[in-house]
Length: 109
Image (cartoon, rainbow, N blue to C red; front, side, top):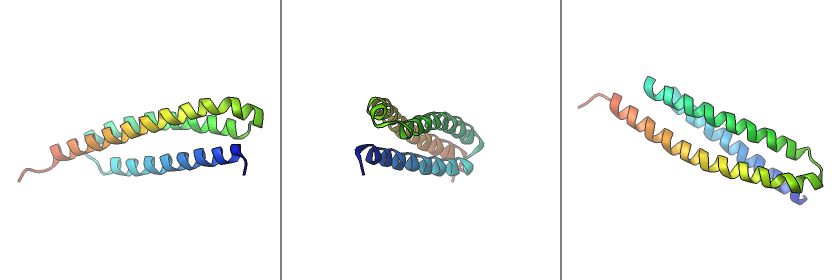
């Protein structure tokens, strides 16, 4: 396996991990209160758009020649780093929002 193949395998694994995380967060939104669902779905949609853009860049890189790969790799690395950071912040804010709305909607004892 060459450098390009190893790099692409790593990026593909990261994309699969994000997709799985996205589906887990979507499932949480499905059981949330109405207010939390609105916030969740808006944030999920924003993440999905960025994720799809990264997948397009990945596909272009995968189909590139070795020479073009070296030039394009930096752009994909940057996009992956930004998406990783954004997704981490996104998960934290959604978890916080869900807890806030669930706490607010839960009956007092």
